[in-house]
Image (cartoon, rainbow, N blue to C red; front, side, top):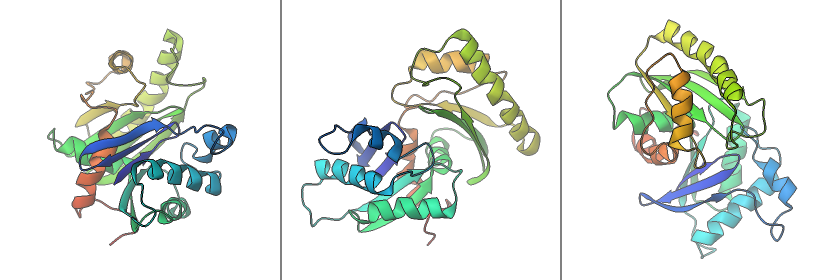
Length: 239
């Protein structure tokens, strides 16, 4: 099972089919809603118990047997210490036979490299509460940057001034990556709630040619399989 847990939704893929994709905010029947929304923050697990219960709940929906423990490959943002990766691994261990963590930029790079030709890629990942601007060169992460939104949510309708402010914060990071590693491909991906029009609006304000892949909302979770099967991509724990 290939899993991506974002701050606002969870996606699970099995046999190249998305078997579950829904909001990570559960009803009060399972866990107090206000706790769940903060359990898995942007890149920090703030409540280990609640996060563990939430993950168990989702897997019980697709795996009915309590005795079946699958192998799970899960994505995680790149800007995190090893202790955070260990916490994520431990959360899944209660329901899994084995847990492997692959960083999100590598999963996206692995997927995109199957469809495009490049060595270096700058990947702009628009999330619910932040934008991640990552640079991957020859299957290695060489730059990570997180830009928090000054407004409530990316999914809400952004005004022109808010979009301009977001682009102004993204451009210096892109310039830094290009200056250090050269220019190759620039990709813009987003979440389930992001319309192609919204991404096009952002891409149109960037001073570089920006590619928006067709399956932009599922690239990371689909790239997990490719990255997991290829030993050149780093994973945790390492083999």
